[in-house]
Every structure is written in structure tokens, then in C-alpha cells.
Amino acid sequence: MTPLARKRLGKILLNTAGILVFLYAVFPVYWMVATGFKANDQIFTTEFIPFPTHFTFEHFERVLTEGVANNSIWLYMRNSAIVALGTVLIGSAFALLSATAIARFRFKGRGTFLVTLLIVQMLPSEGLLIPLYMMVKRAGLGDQLIGLIITQVALTLPFGVWMLRTFVAAVPKSLEEAAWIDGAGRMTTFWKVLFPLVAPGLVATSIFSFITAWNDLIFALYLMSGSEGYTMPVALQYFFGQKGVDWGAIMAGSTLMTIPVVIFFLLVQRRMVSGLVAGAVKG
Image (tube, rainbow, N blue to C red; front, top):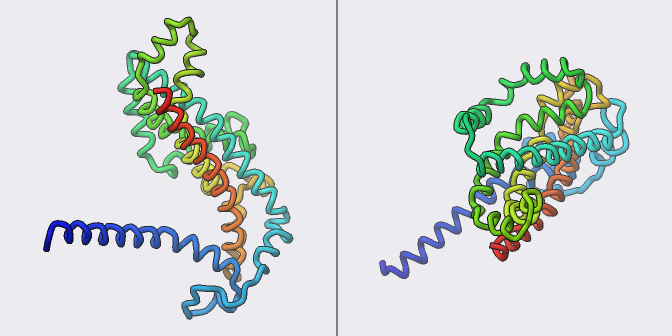
């Protein structure tokens, strides 16, 4: 086999592997959406039906009109949005300030602090459930969305600090020193020089924080005792009843729950691309 033929064969195999991985990742999402539009006789069958032969909006109408646990589905969507956006705003601010301090300053205990962040990130979230639950309750924030937001910030902050630390360290310190020579203060240098260059990393951490807080089930379930404070993942659990599982409603609700995540990702992705281009030009 000639070198050119081997190169073409390698590209074909690589593209084939990429397509298989893509299909493997996308198929569960497609099956969720397709099941939401299937009738019950097509859902509860042993036959493999890849496409709904008769589209129905029955499951979506039931979820949107009847609600869950005597509450409208929009109440749970609102709670999820408040928790997710609050986690992004508060967590991103603390992560950026912490990452800047770690990357730009040398202080006693810096290495220990970084190792501690790494260890906390490696712990399973279930292992932190009881300590965080007790802290939130003792602080008087039980059954409140702000308590759930603080909990999600605590869970996502270590990852955000580690990621943003790399972005801040990659920015040449000479750019900040040049701004100081031109008469800019530390705050002006931070917002005008450093912040635009680390914006792509901030967007990446925001996506991670938003998805983590939006999809969280265990903390929202145990920290919120009243149904009015539940988020969407908890609300979907009500479709698992003693008489059976309403898969149509679950898939319809999951599809509705996925739409805000996709919209948020598309909006933030544009900012990430523009931030990368702006950072390249300023550099």
C-alpha cells in the first residue's frame, strides 16, 4: 500500500470513528425527543420503533397544562433558572477573583490550597450531601433557593478556579505592567486588560456551572422540602408512580428541560468565540 493510500485509509477510519462516537452521544437525546412525540402504544411495546409513526402532543400538553404536584411546570422551570443563573453569576465572580490571586501572587499555603481544591473536586457529591445540608440548615437557608445556589457554588467553584487559573497564568504579565506604566490602576487593568483575555475561560466555566446546577437532583431534593421550591429534575420524579412510570410525560418534560440549556449554550458559545478572537487581537 502506498503512503498516499495509507493516509486516505487513516482519514476514512478516523472519520468513521468520529461519526460512530457522534451517533453514540446523540442517540439518547434523539430517543428522548422522539419518545415524547410517540403515543403510549408505541412507547410500551417490545418492537423497535425508531420514528414515531403518529406524532402526538398529548404528553407535552399534559405536562404544560396539568403541571406536577399541583404546581405549574413553569414554577419548576423558574426555580431551575434562578438556581442555575445564580450559580453562574456568583460562582464565576468568586472563581475569577480566586484564580487571579492564585496565578498572580505568591503567598504562604498557595500549593496546599490548590491541592485542597483538587481533592474536593475528586470527592463524590453524595459524600458532601450531609455536611452541606447541615451547614445550610444551621445558616437558616433551608427550603430557600439561595441556600441551594450557595450549595451549587460550593460544588462548582473548585473546577472553576482550576480552569480559570490556567487562563490567567497564560496572560503575559507584561501586558498588565504596560498598562500600569500608562497610568492605569489595578482595577482598570483588571477590567480592561485581564478580563477580556480570560473571557473564553470564564465562558467555559459558566457552561459547566450552568449545566451542573440545572441538572442537579440530589441536593435540590434534600434541601428543599416543599414542592414549591423544587426544580425541574425533582419535578420529573413525580412521574415515577406506584402504578407505573409515565415515560411519555418524563420524556416530554426532559425535552422541555433541555431547551433552555441548549439556548444558553448557543448564546454563550458566541461570546466564547468572540472572546477568543478579541484576545488574539489584543495579544
